[in-house]
Image (cartoon, rainbow, N blue to C red; front, side):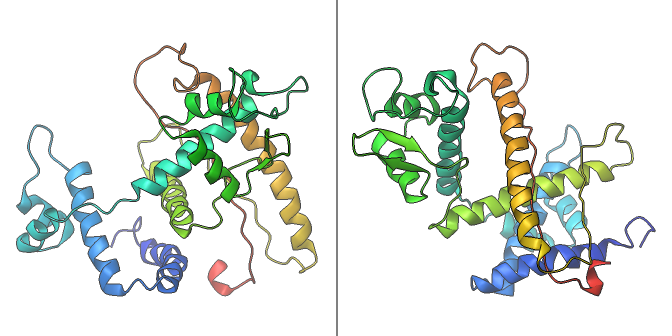
Length: 274
């Protein structure tokens, strides 16, 4: 193993330990995990390690992954696992809440999210949903936002936004979807920064101290929520002005994804953290 990759086993163990904890809690056996891993190995080899101008062959994928040709052929025939329903629900709810907070059409004279009637005119919850959630029925979106306590329906029938972000609470599938996307984005950032030819690495920083008393943690949690939420809302406002879905007047080529993620962590100090 080269000097560059000699640290990989320890890094993989650190990544896998919290992941395996989640898998065991949800009754996912090693056999199921191994099948998923085979599928990802084969799919990634096909997508990322092909030879330009040539169709990926079973033999080449077998060499790259270490799987037999017979196993590669079997895995290639398996359907792709998907969480499309959770992804669509999450993305559309996020777009609605973000637009409610940022779009002038749906804010009041103080710049805050306006109290919206369910229907009737351009400044209504129905119009907000129509413009920013695709073809989701208004009642279905309202029920979803109520379910996660993101909105309240007032006595006069108007809808009040009561959350700064869409945070799934009841449906574990939605939370697990976030696990897949957020961790995937973070590892992709690290992979980009590990490439030797990269001239402009992606921003990747953290701050951590390892000798904090218990009494400090609640204060730091509150500080993190306040500061991080403000930063993310500022970033979201900037991105919305440059995104074609929220601003059709934007010109330019290509279709790209970009964003910033912030996460909080805490726990007892252990030797593995050093």
